[in-house]
Amino acid sequence: PELDPVGTSFRRWAELLAAEAVGEERAAEVDGWVELLGESQHVLGEREVDPHVDTVATLRQRSWVVRSEQAEVLLGRVPTAFHCGVDDVLLAALTGAVAHGRPESMSGLLIDVEGHGREPLG
Image 1 (tube, rainbow, N blue to C red):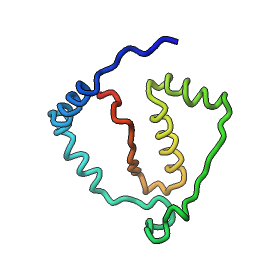
Image 2 (tube, rainbow, N blue to C red):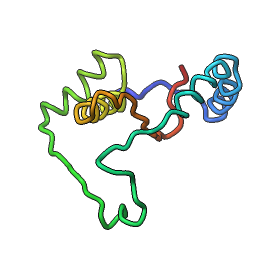
Image 3 (tube, helix red, strand yellow):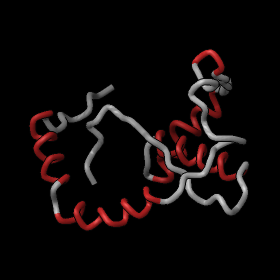
């Protein structure tokens, strides 16, 4: 297999990110983000989170084993067809699953996503 082409250096990427953060395009988005994040957040589940009850000890988990044919579709064909990454496919699946289990009046879903920090800009 061939190596990927040499990417942007960390220094250059950090410079580009800093410039993007203070650019006019991002500044124009501020009011929209403030409005979006200022809306009341709906509970995901039957009640609000209780830090005295909702601890690591009470954590529940669900896991699946995915057949290789399904994994090939999820990791290869779907991202290629939609020109996106696997993370985008998984977020879309999560959003669909949450929407399926909620009343129609609950339209928003805020997800905090973390990455390695060097995703392409734009």
